[in-house]
Length: 162
Figure 1: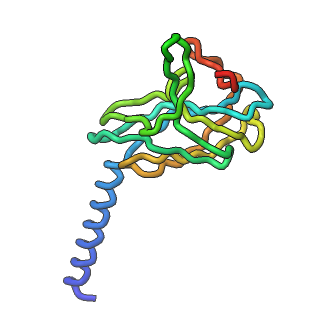
Figure 2: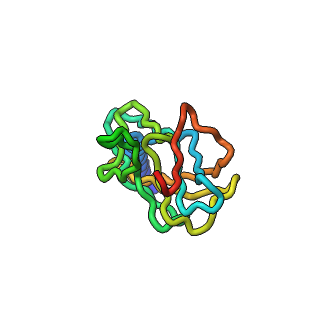
Figure 3: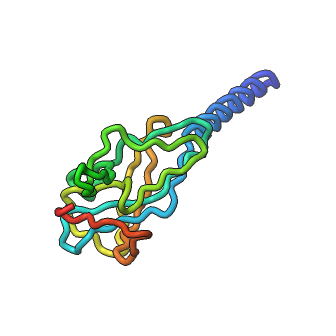
């Protein structure tokens, strides 16, 4: 092989590498401290919590979440009704994660809701979860079940009565 084809091949490789690197920096979401739980061992519902960090200079949005652990998996939050009662509601538009910022999914606030658990959540189990972002695309994580963790600052129960 002569020098010119080698040079063209190297230039093409560098161009492709640069493009892949640029795409990765646009789609960089960091997930920290994920954990899941249910309110009781026999509960048909559960929830997952974590902190999302957008390591880019562009706003992004968590728009969906999927897992095989439940019949339905939804993005939820707590809202106060006219009587001052907090109720859980599905969030249709997802959660914004501003550029360079974090968004906490925590007990008593925004969270991932598991409806119709296919089997009870046991302490130490690992739940595969796919987070779908508008710009970052799919982020696949493993979420440990932690039934011992206490709420930080008075979280709410995820029982059917909420």
